[in-house]
Every structure is written in structure tokens, then in C-alpha cells.
Length: 307
Image 1: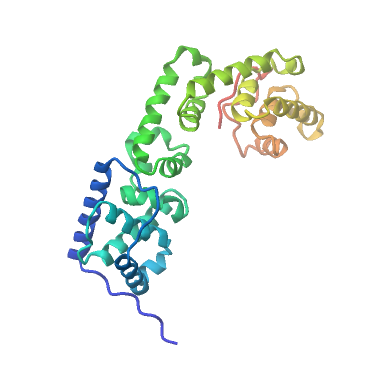
Image 2: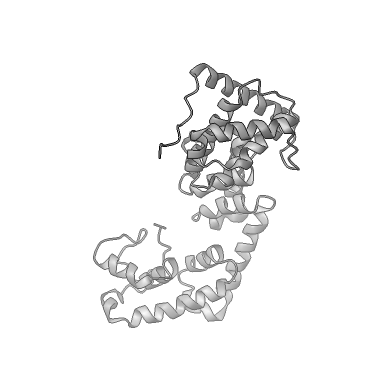
């Protein structure tokens, strides 16, 4: 059986014309101040155009672009009263390529990023933009921005950075500055009231510190911070599990040589609760560094640097 031929490549001039067409359409969409929500109302001409292009283009089939992306492109053009003028095939191809690039950039499915692609085109520059360098240690934040604010993901991230600076400088949260990730989490996950989230964290830390069940942890206050920040739904349950695991690690003969530095058991139980034994074994073999841990510390009272 003969393979189905791939559509012939479009001329460079036509692709450039289609790129300009998409740029103009996106400009009109931005200037309208509206979004693309609502019902798609495609006429017979749009339906025929889509069927013709999708049926002929091997490139589009190869990229597995969801049909809804082209339906919304047609809807955007209809709402902004912009004719394709014979550029539909090249425009569809460019959109398919942009979608594939964005899906790879954000480690997402195409259906998750087709909205932001329609609004903005390809966004492969975002993770490498110097403006967002401080966010690169949490790459998932770029996908969140693209899916949560498809019209302007870069604007959302600039707002997050501004809010992080404000939270970091706020004297109420001075005790959280050695855990800068909490400011990022608050700004991204609770944009309407990040201050309220952080005040709740501080309140919970105070409650945990005063809880007599956790008296043995009071010489390592970073444990309470870790519980309140990393396990907001049940920090008490998390700490009870930490205490139980510390007892088990302390009694384990494999770790007898570490018993003069008991703080390391707290660290392993707190930062790797699923398998603290494996972490300690690797540490003893010199395969991993546990944060900024000094194995010759006698008390383990300081908060280790996070790895």
C-alpha cells in the first residue's frame, strides 16, 4: 500500500504572510479587550475550509493538533472580522507548529496550551527569559502561568515576581525569609491574598511550637516550618509521623554511627518522609549531601539548607 503523500511545503513568502496575518489577528484580539470564551459559531464556509485543510495536511496530522484549536482560530477570525484571504493552509500549519513547540516548552498536552497559543503564538522564550531567571528552579510555574492565564502568561509571572519582592520585604514575614519558596508559592497559588496565606502559616507554626506533643522538636524550629508549609492540610499528622520515624531510625542498628548527631534523623524524617532510610544510607556512603549538613554537629539544632 502506497504511503499517503505529505502536503507540499508552503513557500517562504506564504508562510511569512501567514505569520503576519496571525500577528494582526492577535493584535486585534488584544485590542478588543475580550477573551475567546463562549460558543463557537462556525458557518458553512469555515467548516468547509477546515475540512479541506485538515484533510490535506500531513504536517497537521503528524503534530496531532486538536481540532478544537483550529475551530477557535476560525472563531477568533470571525469575531475580529478578519478574512483568511487564501492563507488558511499556511496559518493552520503555523498554528500546529506553535502548539507543538509550546507543548514541549511547558511539558504539557496540546489541549492544555492551545488557548495561550491562540492568544500569543509560540512561547519557547519564556523559561529562558532573564526576567524569569529566579523562577527556573520551579519549572512547573511556567506551565501554570500558560494554563491559568492564557491571555497573558508573562504578565502573570511579572506580577508574581513583584508580589514575591513585596512579601519578602514585609517585616511580618521576616522569619520566613530563609524559606523563599514559600513566597513564590503564596504569590502563585493564592494571588488574591498571599499575605493571608503567609499569616496562616505563621499562626500554624506558633500552634505547632506550643503543642506539648512536639516538645522534643522545639530545638529544631525548622521542622515546624516545614510541616506548616509543606503539609498545610494536616501538619500535626505530619509531625506525629516524623516523631515515629525518628524513633525507628534511632533504634535502627544500621545508623548507630549517627546517633551522636540526632538532628540528622529529624532531617531525614522531615525532608524525605517516604524513605528516610535510603537517604541516610546514601549519606553514609557519601553519595548524597543532606542540604548543608555538617556530620560533626553535636546537636543538629540549626536548620539545614535545603538541597
